[in-house]
Length: 164
Image (tube, rainbow, N blue to C red; front, top):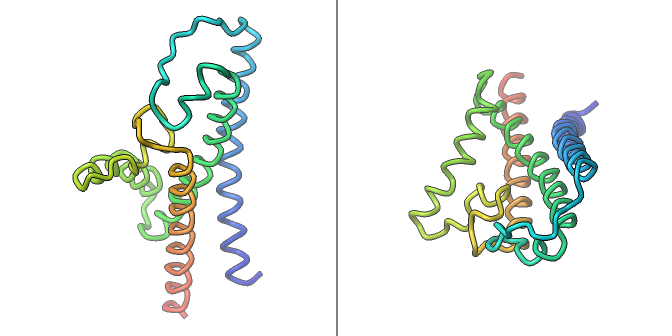
């Protein structure tokens, strides 16, 4: 198997495994909660802000399904980011620590330059920012994915050629 095929197969398997794990767990939680008790009609709308605020008041189940689908994408992208972090920093804690630091502090760093709506926290918790739109969320996922895969691919390819 050549390097390119190996890298993209590994990337895809890491992303899909992580994404399926969180999707299965969240789906089980949704099913259990629906079996336990029917959805009350008078739930207070805590989701008045954010990317999917118009869906929640009318279609709570649809909102939950969208949240699960977005969790799939979020987990896929961030597991690849974590994998790439281990390529750059050969430490057993780098995957967890570096992605956590990027996730938490991106909002604070972007807040200083008036771009807090692009903070990575808004990718998972939609009610954090009233100005985030679904298009911005998906574009940001695509950018993080492309940058992560490209950086990991070229770093690994470079290190293989250096070691030969």
